[in-house]
Length: 133
Image (cartoon, rainbow, N blue to C red; front, top):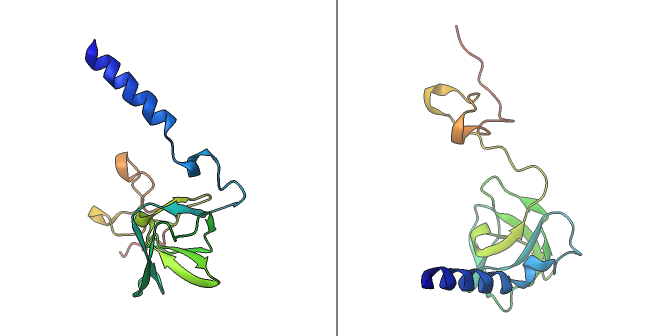
C-alpha cells in the first residue's frame, strides 16, 4: 500500500511540473519550431555536416525559434541574431509538423518495399533500383 501511495504521489508531482513550452508558450510560432534548450549548452553549426561555430548556454539560447530547414541527418536550421545556424536535435526541445524526410537505405536482402514490423515505413518515398535480369 505504501509503494502505491508513493507512486501515485510521484505521478501527480510529475503532472504538475510540466515544462513551460509544453503548455503552449510557443503557440505564436506555426509549423516546425525549436522551443527551448534541452541541454546546459547548445552547439551552433555552420552547416548540417559542418563545423561548430560556438556554444550558447541554455539561459542565453532564444526560445520559440521557427525552423527554416531540416536536413536528412535531422539537424535543424534556425535564425539567431539574423544569422542562419544549425542545431542538433538532441540539444533542443522541438516540434515538427508535416511529413518527415524519407529514410532511405539498403535493407537486408536488397528490398526497400517490405513493410512489416518495425521497418513498416522504411523505404517509402525512396528511389527504387530496377531489377536486372
